[in-house]
Image 1: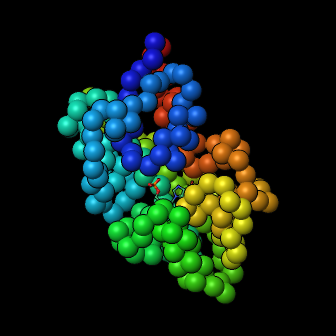
Image 2: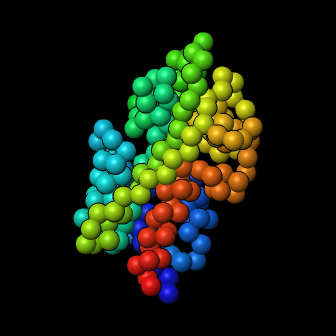
Length: 202
Ligand code: IMP
């Protein structure tokens, strides 16, 4: 039997990625499908806080099992920046129309701040908060890597063109979505989430 759960996100990239990771075990309902339109608050200062705030907001309105994720790029030489502010690093979201424009500005700021710095260590970290009606659950996925100083590749989104995952030669923007799903922060967090859900079924 398919389990219906709501993924509290407005990001179509993520919905596509997670759908391909979850397979047939679950029927993911989008916010649109449950009739929610608008923005979900995201006012916390940690990835954990933001993920929980988003899941709780939708759970309280619709009483459906619900999960939300939050991801940040944490750069060592910048004390963990942009972290929870990764999406709006170069300025408020409303300053930028298309997501591509925003990502381009975010990357430009990142590269400017890292200019001349030999310490390029960074990681993507994803936190998922899941509310099943009884408890809060958290799942974390990390991929370590490094930031290069020139964009490479056209796949993916966000900071993908400047992030090379550990053990690879290409950036996240130079590999296919299915390759990225084998190693990404989000894939790792969601693998733990899926394991948890499977344990609940048996
Ligand atoms: P979100 O919490 O998944 O919306 O991620 C926040 C921001 O982190 C996004 O707007 C992107 O800038 C960045 N980000 C998240 N995941 C990725 C990824 O897989 N590749 C590149 N950038 C990402």
